[in-house]
Length: 326
Image (cartoon, rainbow, N blue to C red):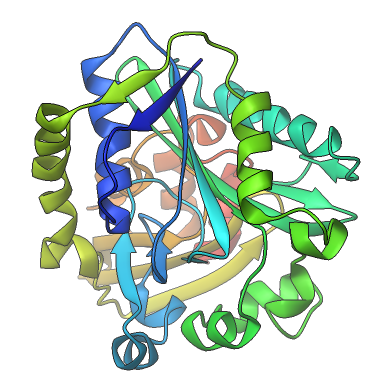
């Protein structure tokens, strides 16, 4: 796994680094990469989230906080100069195994600093049972991309105002605020600067001896990919309109919300959103299976009986899904 080095001093917006991941995954199909990056304050929401539900848009607009949507699942996070983002690109068709390998590598790097770090939760890395790193992944044919944030420090006021996680999600963790769920590297190792911490990660996580230096031609190609992330339809994402709505936090899966429109008793449209992780496009799979099916538990159960739920959304089962929509 080789380190990626950007051979310039330009400050980039967050979407540039998401585009960099895609560039590396598609252009260098026989190599694995790792890189670290930092950005000005930006909220990054998961592929399947509703921005209006997860983010205080007015606060972000008034304070100059950028809002970007990524192509992986999971929840919304606030990135800024107080934390470090990591990206891992590898050849793999098994995204779950890849995800586990990545979080194990990062947790081991933290343990080398003497921290009590574990990676045994759904998509987080913990120190003393508090979240210090949230991570997500997505897959393109033959390649997997994993990325996440590491909290060296953070502004609790900015985080609490920019992010507005649903009451369902907070209640599931038995807490009343975002602040009570997280910790930072600085809290545990006060004498370690953020640059020293980043250098430690870059020395202990990548294991290759052939760093990739990105030159001007590479940067122009990455910037071209970056533009797709600024498309309004992509940023806004799903806009659910349903006469049946349901929301639930499912242990081991995350928060899942559904919006269903019915026409003459049949499912006419089906929308799925939340902070769950997915191996394939869950929205597409469920919509193709359920549209046209009569909205009764018996008929829906029959329609989904051959679906491989863990292969679509890890941790989800047909019974949990039925209980969600009925």
